[in-house]
Image (cartoon, rainbow, N blue to C red):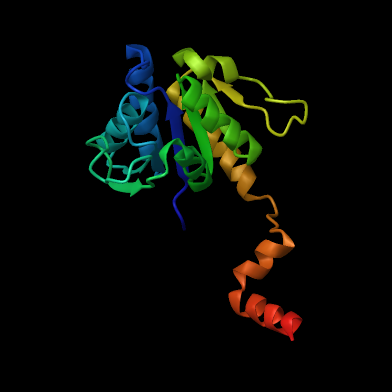
Length: 198
């Protein structure tokens, strides 16, 4: 069975507090203990701490970085996806995960969380880490009330909540748009296109 892929969103080193770093390290460790693939933006601060914790528990880490070089990543990344698209890579982080935990964070973290919200991704905010996580905890981001961002007080609670939400989300019937369905079957899609042109 495919491993659950969880992203951890949070502060870069310029705004990461010691508390957020320690909490992120524990989140990474707890995710790895549960057999999850751990995804971050591959930088320093919360991203490094998360991977450091995951490696303590022999977890698999994936850094999705904004730069073109696979060398520009923290030392705990096992797999590096060098997007070369700058901060637009935030969308790739969320498309790659099944759910995300927010630890600390600033504007970049908020950007990632809002993208996850728009994609109906399960989100848990570790409010005790401060920053964006504290701001997002227990909230809907707009009047559509797409998903409520869950609050957690400890790393273990955050991990247990996200895994429960992801399991529930996996039970949903996923439907693609008609266009996406056609694109998934390229042969059929190509044949339909040729027929229309004749």
